[in-house]
Length: 79
Image 1 (spheres, rainbow, N blue to C red):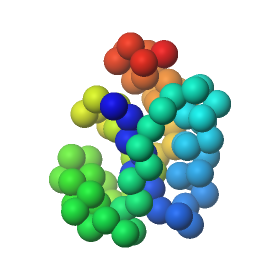
Image 2: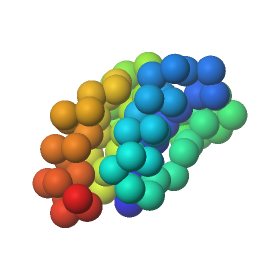
Image 3: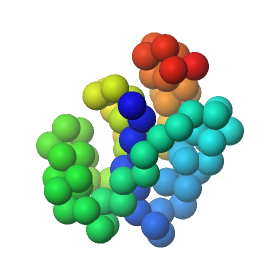
Image 4: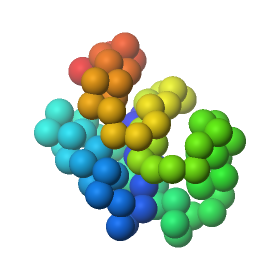
């Protein structure tokens, strides 16, 4: 399961989602500006308030880090 915690106005969030699209990875887009409960889960899990945050099977990459995202997807057997 892949989730991208994002906001509609965040350019780095768009880049993270475009990167996942290019890799052909399905993901759930979680708009933390509209879902306070999801935002709080993200902050509790990562100790970060910034977006994007990419979650892959309960493991997190904070910020748009293509190498980190791809590495985690490989590690989790999704690529």
